[in-house]
Length: 516
Image (cartoon, rainbow, N blue to C red; front, side, top):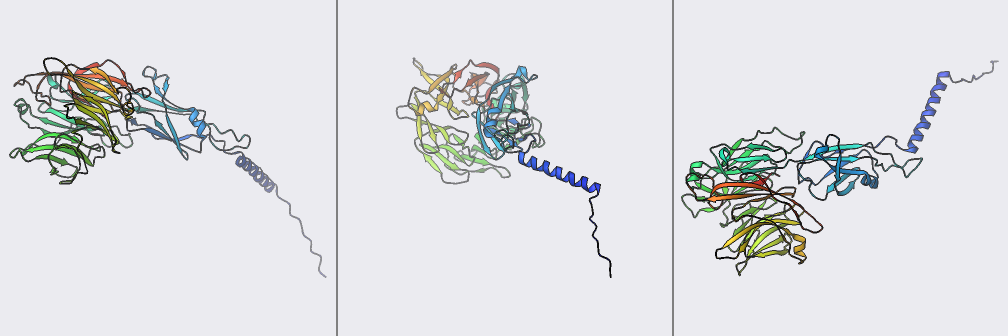
């Protein structure tokens, strides 16, 4: 017979017992961590304005977080402050800037109530905010965010103008008001007569003639563009920047005289009013677009014109009204406004325009016309309505107006005024608030800065044209001297009444225009 079988019970080796113990302990720790939540601090993963210069078109920034955040906590602890110039080294904060907050998952957008003033440095700071994850010990508490600070800048205050004094006569000049730096863009053999600034600020479109033609009063303008040496793009997106003063001719004057011109908001379309040198009846608008030869629009001839904000059509005075024409040759009008004679300006978003109506009693009326067809008469005057610009919030118009001075002679006194649009709509007190009265002068150019906080205007001294005067005003008068003035303005949205300051004399020059 065989012997009985015996089973020997195998015991765990010491190393196995240690491994099993470690596994049990780690499992318990992992379970506790899962139950109690993530104890690592939340943080800001991305700030959309990092290393950027901000312009008026930049309405707000975006913060992206590493995890869902408590919305109320972020709102209570987020600060956006202007860094005071005299305290940059110590990072002393200025008054907190207000805005609106909106959320999309882990992304928070902060939208400013109005464009930030140019030429300043700002700090975004977030400390003490907590995430939105529950925790085992206290579900009402979150994990406090890792402190976040970032600094960004708004663009410098920069404008262009035409020089009048000495070697600057007739040259296109760029002036950085923030840094007090001047750059001459055009050579001595070109007399600049007018210009428009491209939306990216990197180029300027200008018309110019030679000094001999100008002194003889000949219409010999040609169209050029010139680089400014400036770029508002972020360093990561910026392509190779052209140096300032690189000139390219766009349109000659061989067969046609070039008159008025306009540049579209997207910088891709130029409209020029031209007349055939041999056949004055051949008069009308031409279009210039990238990679295409200049060609006539072949529309009914008209007067003053403006390209619409969408860059797809133009508003042109035709006959007894204003026609809206597409930018295609021989196209029929999209709309016709028989009530008005001139379009002065458009709001940046195209939602409204200012137009002038010539009344039967020889007065003029300024109207606000919306894209919904609403029309509001803002003022009626026996004087002139020369120009109007919307401030960024579309709450105030800054207009160059004139008033008739009673006397033996017909005299118009120009003045710059602010027109409160909401007050005009409510039919309350007069919406027109004069800001500054100017010396008697018809040819004045006014430019409102992109942030809506400063006006530039010129003061020209005219003289009888002679061979010694190369510069001419738009009315054909010789320019003996000209001065640029700066008028700061501050909007008060509660009363719609701008706070006025005294204008400051800047530089010799005329036709100033702010860069975007």
